[in-house]
Amino acid sequence: MRHRLVLAALLSLYCLARPPIHSSLAQSPESEPPLLIETPPPAPEASPAPPQQDEHQRPELLPREREDAVMMLGELRGAVRVSPDDAGDRLKLAQGLYRIGDLDAALDECRIAIKLEPESAAAHLQLGVTLMAKQDGRAAAAALMDAILLDPALTQAHYSLGSVQYSLGNLSAAIQSYRRALELQPHFPDARYRLALVLKLTNRHQEAARFMEEAAVGGIPQAQFFTGNAYRNGQGVEKNPALAIRWWTMALEFGHQRAADSLSQLRRQALSPEQPERRRKEALEAFRRYREALWNDYPDAAGHDPGDSLGIALLNNSESSNGVTALFHEAFALSEPAHEELARLYESGLDSRLAQFDTRILTCFETTAADGFIPAKKALARIYGKGLGVTVDMRKAKAMLKGLPKRETTAILDEIVGR
Image (cartoon, rainbow, N blue to C red; front, side, top):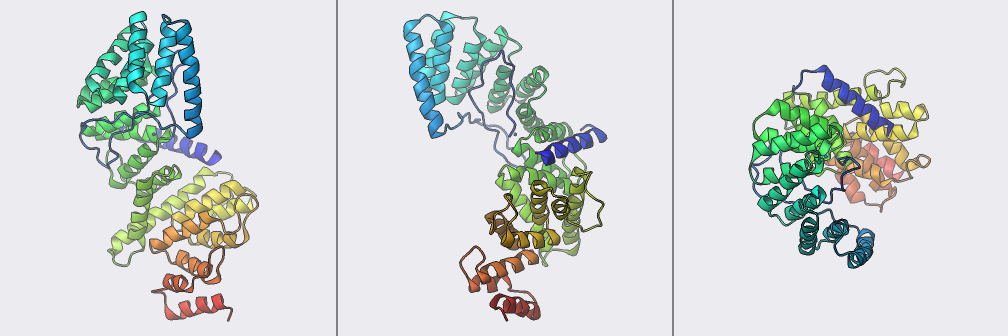
């Protein structure tokens, strides 16, 4: 947690130092009803495609959550039976029906609630988001605009209307709606992310990059991925491959697969002998600068020489949790000392932070070895050759050593068999 807070602060300072140019959820004012729809972002391409039919899907419920929602639905229906003319109870029932996926019944209850209380902005909002889930964009837009007329400060209505306008291809209106949502609620990373995507479609790249980076700082994984792309290619920002690595690494912590693919591609560029020397050096330098910048997150860490491992330094300072995190970051960024330390910890473990034969270390080695990193291949050869936490597999061990100098291969195999 300390690592992420410091990182966010540093990145915020970085943004302030240069010219101006989604997982945190939006926080809504307590006076507003909960937003019951989670609209996915437009197709996550490096350059977003022009909007067609936006998809509006409800968040999937876990089995226990669905069971609770079904039980609550019985209570909501009971309340409506007792007070059939209570618009508030009808709206709550509509929200409950929406939650379990009964959209048609939810629409009926929304309309009854509006008939009973036409001035209810919350009922118009729920009608709008339910119509979004039904992919009826024009009807949803009308309902959301009614909600805004009744309550212009209803942040969720402006945000949802932006998504609907995007799906209808009205980019100018979508930009206006997202801007209004941010005026009402400045701490709204999801709105910044959506606004950035639409601005990019209108070729306002510098402004898009600014909002995208702010959304990335807010914890939106897709925004972190796109911000990494922007720094990799110099789109709306000054080209900075080291910052690209940093943002992709942050997105990877949320399991963002395309960020993992981008990091893998850059590692292969750095390690493949088939790459032009200039491109190899550029990629290696980006990883070096990224590893060096990690030290800035820990100003209390002892002074270091170029090439020192931050993770090892933190472990030596009894900061086990931060040290393990830093070791993984460095190892994925092609640090030989970090790989060597993780190889040692794989066999020994580290208190409660790393179990002996921890599969996360094995996954790290397999990932970087697949990209061509020799230290990871050597570590895996020992692991599979000796059966360290895995079944002995000499064929796989030898395959890991393929392409190494014969003397080096022989020495490793001798060690494995105990000669």
